[in-house]
Amino acid sequence: MAQIISGIAMSHSPFIMTNKEAGGVKGQMFLDKAEEMQKWIKSESPDVIVLISDDHFNSYFYNHMPSFTIGIGECEGWGDWKIPKYKIPVEKELANHILTKGLSQGVDFAFTMSMKVDHGHTQAIYLLNSDLDIPIVPIAVNTSAPPLPTMERCFQVGEIIQNAIESWEDDTKKVAIIASGGLSHWVPTPKVDSKKPEDQNMINILVHGHSVIENPEEYKKIRKRG
Image (tube, rainbow, N blue to C red):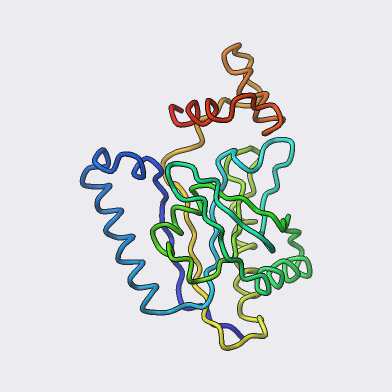
């Protein structure tokens, strides 16, 4: 079986990509710790990173909002918050193994062969694996659009990921798990049932997705002002 060599939990902070100085002492602590983690990962030389994070209404909207999505083919970054539009190498064999293991154990992951991820995933890559020398299994969890998956369900999915890695037939591989989330913020969007006139344009985008965004660049500016 493959060996899990680490579990790393980190926040993500897109503002620090555009205004490092505003982060102050705490922001610098975040960057310093990320640098320590990067050095540790390189020293341990994992063969694969299973990278779990969320989406911020960039790839998934209310017209299609899966609780858990796994990328099993191509993966690229949106390039938001001045993070590069990475072409992310995916460890397809392990990704498919996690997918099928989930199906056999009662978890139906949504899956995609053309995944796009935003700063939730790509900031972790930028800080910990910017050379893209370690392939990724990208997994997205819905943390934006209620109803959200329960903590119990998330724990179950975590167990399935563990079981899948440990039952992967390539027993020479070392796997690192990185989970990136936010502890004190949320996506700055209105509630989907808001009746306020000023919210209706954004709600239309939340419900229908990219097809109704008339000016993508202006949409990005609005989201940053959040």
